Figure 1: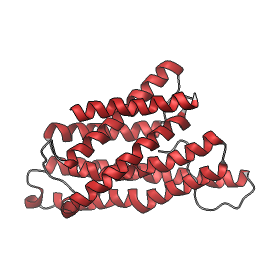
Figure 2 (figure 1 turned 180 degrees about the vertical axis):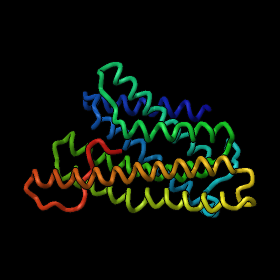
Figure 3 (figure 1 turned 120 degrees about the vertical axis):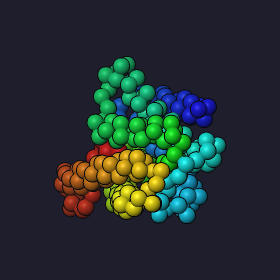
Figure 4 (figure 1 turned 90 degrees about the vertical axis):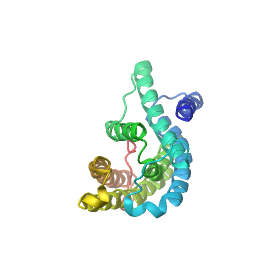
Length: 244
């Protein structure tokens, strides 16, 4: 609990520093500060992936003590999500800045799953691995930086990185976890003691995969529109400024 509370305060502080620097409580500034936080989470996530790799065909599902590395990464990820919610609520109350609905949906799906994991001390390895998918938020920060600095080429680079992460990492991760979980659920011996957890995982990963497919479509359309406006040939991708 101490790690979670300290990290939450620290992450809210990062958002506050971003506001102090840009003097803008809007979405681009929020995306940049989220990218800074997410960069650290991604590093922790890949370290968790390396540690949990032997458990991959169990969808990284296991019961954990509350003092191992996977728990630490899970606590940090939970703190980042809560800090996002705190900041989104505060900036709306202070400046009436609305939050992206897609981001709210994404976080709203994650928080109950995290709460269940911490209550039952299960799935920290899985959550740690899921932290690697925050690479998308890092790329969105590049897009936002381009917006803040008025550099369309930087925005385009960030958008292409976003789509690459979605297609090359996030969606494959969700699909892998879904397939492995369905196979385990079909085997009574394999799912023993984890029926609820794997059922939650299947439902969550299917929804996350659908959300990521939506983001891919949004980005592709947005990039084509941007390149037409700039008189350039439409390539393949562009991330909407409001993407995750």
